[in-house]
Amino acid sequence: DAGVIQSPRHEVTEMGQEVTLRCKPISGHNSLFWYRQTMMRGLELLIYFNNNVPIDDSGMPEDRFSAKMPNASFSTLKIQPSEPRDSAVYFCASSLIVLWASGSYEQYFGPGTRLTVT
Amino acid sequence: SQQGEEDPQALSIQEGENATMNCSYKTSINNLQWYRQNSGRGLVHLILIRSNEREKHSGRLRVTLDTSKKSSSLLITASRAADTASYFCATDAIQGAQKLVFGQGTRLTINP
Image (cartoon, rainbow over all chains, first blue to last red; front, side):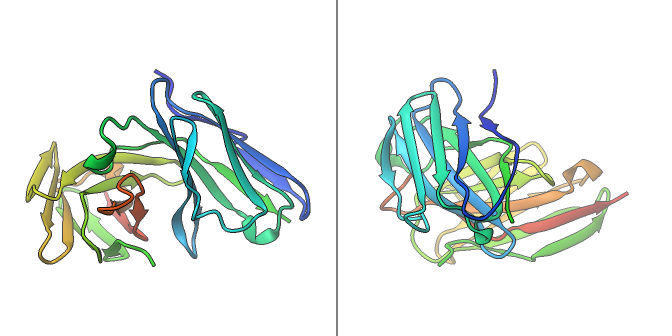
């Protein structure tokens, strides 16, 4: 089985440009998570979806960030306009949640997209 | 603020020795998870322990959980060079149970 697929793996862009990161979760999983990892702040949850619906976007840093999940097999994270402080590794993870209130489930992470904004 | 904090931040041991990493958290949880991250890669799930469990084993891994002290430990026995990686604990919360908060991680180096 293919794991979580992210594209691109590396992105270098100039400040002010729009950046779109893509994620394909594991087939059959019903939840998707976007994280950002930096040396200074560690791994931060940006937003997560359940059954394609955004559940918690409190980690999205600013209005410049937006995320969509148009169907169960695809999600995007968009930054517009990008800034140098957005440079980080962005991870997508998916999970199969059976009982919502029973606590967290194992998450499967993609390889990440390393974003550099100059 | 981050829920989980790992200790130590870095650990270097000889191959064959045991490695112990600790995690402390602040609020009540449903579950606590441990993940491994090799350099330049995504995180890989190692083990999940529920709040009503005190100890769990998986191969060379042993995880303990003390909810009264709000702490957990990960023990890797008979370490191998391939165990070199960063290890993270992740906690959920009673409310918003699917939201994981990760600690800063412990960087483990196994010297051959």
